[in-house]
Image 1: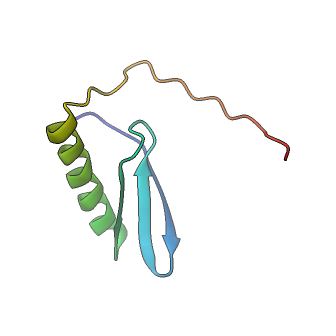
Image 2 (image 1 turned 180 degrees about the vertical axis):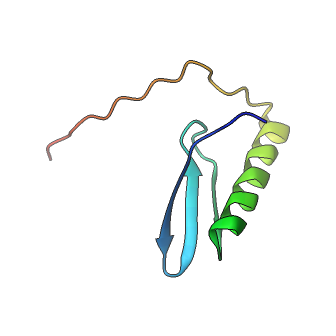
Image 3 (image 1 turned 45 degrees about the horizontal axis):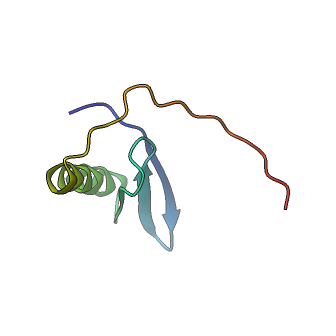
Length: 67
């Protein structure tokens, strides 16, 4: 399994997170450890259902947007 980046936050007592490299893979858990287990399961399901291939040369650029 590749190494992916988990972004997470606490919302109303739940750890909620997403994978930076795989848009649409979100999960939650009562603890950080549970979130990590759940996000791994969600990633595996995406691989199985969509035959998703991770982007190896993903680049990120943060930009400011004025509204």
